[in-house]
Image 1: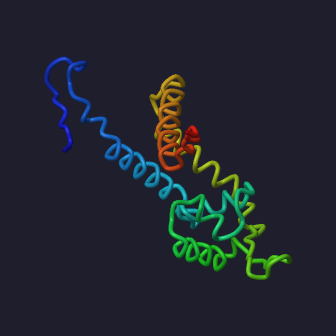
Image 2: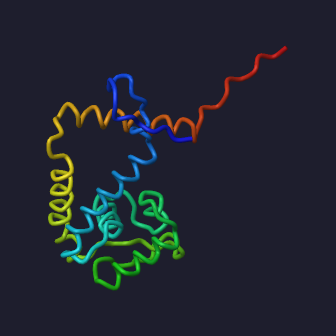
Length: 167
């Protein structure tokens, strides 16, 4: 059951329903993507396509499978996005010399030339979203998000239990 915040009384005594994590994180996610979409549209890119180009440029991944582990979309959706980037002339496919089943994705010169514009779009979006947020608040936000992600990762990948003592 969701708690509802009261706008009356002492703020310190109000419930924290207005901080409900899922609701706020979805709103933040939507705000970030909406701003990026507006800024990337003139480049002919979506936020997912921008992420693919960025990760290929940074060397984080160069296969559809590797990218699908970094960008939160299903493997089939990643394949479609990669195909669109190939059709736009921004990605090339190259078969691996070691394993012909593996296809490496390479940025074209045109995609490499877009990197400064992509970075600028991201900076402008963050600047707009973080107006009025102090450096101290930014550091606190990052720390809280890191703790939440650590909690999630520790829950999803809990450490193995200690060995049981032998009787």
